[in-house]
Every structure is written in structure tokens, then in C-alpha cells.
Amino acid sequence: MRKALTVILLVIVLTVPFVFFDILPVIGDPDSAPNSHVSDYYIEHAVEECNSPNMVTAVIVDYRAFDTMFETTVMFLAGIAVMLILAEHPKRKLMVPTRVRRLNVHEGSPVYRTVNKDVMVSVIQVLILIYAMYVLFHGEVSLGGGFQAGALIGMTYLLDVMVCRREQPLFRTTKYKAGAIAGLGPLLYAVTGMIPFIGGGLYLQYGKMPFAIHEAELHSIGITSVEIGVTIGVAATIITIINALTERIVFDDEI
Image 1 (cartoon, rainbow, N blue to C red):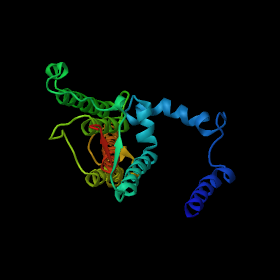
Image 2 (cartoon, rainbow, N blue to C red):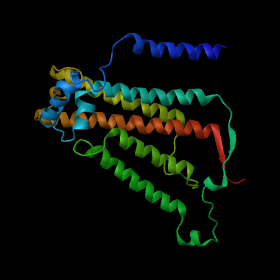
Image 3 (spheres, rainbow, N blue to C red):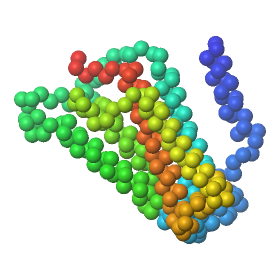
Image 4 (cartoon, rainbow, N blue to C red):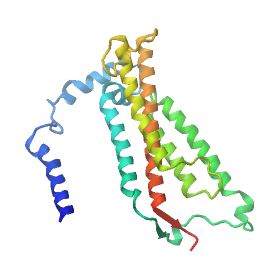
């Protein structure tokens, strides 16, 4: 009964604002702000004001940087919530169907003589990490950004946990350390936003950062800094969730 009442209360709290308050523009309304002037302004001024040919990056981490900071914070809180929910539960052994079990290659097999699986996975992980860095530092001028780079780093960790059998993992941490690192992402984002205060600017107003360089370059520095924060937050949050799940469940593919 208590759980049912909790669900009902959550539904009411989440539904009432959308039913009784007109807080969002009508989809497709030609007179709404996005359709009347906001989008046109972004398209016409993004490169000049943000020094970012990638308009998506300009909008997300410059024009709407305050909103994106809280999106990163929500991801961090989601990872912490998963960790706390699963923290006190005992481990369970999960039978994995034969068709999805990890490749069990013995030393006498042709596959093992051809290539060592762990070595190949390590090579793939290194390539993914290189690509993640490319996506991070080129997101300002091309496709990519902090969210994508963080997801790639998280997937590298997932490969290490669920595919490799090496005694010394490529990199491994606990869910608590990963959760702490995840918090550094939003913190770096927030601190970057406060630096313009020194130059007399507003929060996240990159052009007022106290560095003696062109304003356009200041925007590039600000965008790159918050993107690094997003990358750290997303990657560490994914790792936190992976650790919380793998510590709860033993994927036994030896049975």
C-alpha cells in the first residue's frame, strides 16, 4: 500500500504542472519563440559569437550552457541513485543463455593460436579511447562533444569488465570512487561558469573570462572546459552504474 501511494503521489506531482500550467510552447506554433526568432538568431550568430562552426555545440554549451550543466548534474545524481539502491542488496547468480555467453577460447583451439582475445580487446579499447578524445576536442567544430566522449569511455570500461578475463584489468575502480569522480564533472562545469565573475561578467559568460586573448578564443576555452566536465561526469556515471550492477549480479557463464 505504501509503494502504491508513493507511485500515485509521484504521478500527481509530475502531471499537475503540465495539465494546469502552460509552461511549454505549442509544438509547431509559428509564433512561438523558437520558430519566430530564437532559431534564426542562433543560425546567424553562432559562429561569430561562440567561435563554434558546430551550431549544436554552440547552443548546448554556450547559449544554453546553464541548462546543460543541470543535465550533467541529473546524470550524476542518477548514477548515485542506482548505486545507493543496489548497495545493500546481496549478489545474485544469473544464468546466462548459451547464445550470449562470453567466448570461451581454450589454449588448444585455432582461435587462440590465431589471436589472443584479451590482446585484441585491449587494442579495440585503445582505439575507442583515442576516438573519444577526438570526439571531445573536435566537438566544437564537428560532430561530437562531451556526452558522446563520455559514453565512449564508459563503453571501454564495459568491455574490460564483461569481455576480458585478464588478471590485471586495463583500468578498474570501485563504484564509490567512480561516483566521486562523476561529481568532479559538474563541479568543473560550475567552476568554469564562475570564472567570468573575475572579469565582471555573468555566470557562464565565457567572453568575460580574465584572459588576455580575443573574445572568440575565450568562448572556445569555455566550451572546451565545460565539455571536459561533461565527459568526466558522463563516463564516471556510466562506470558507477556498471560497477553497481556487476557487484550485485554475478554473470556466471561457466555453468
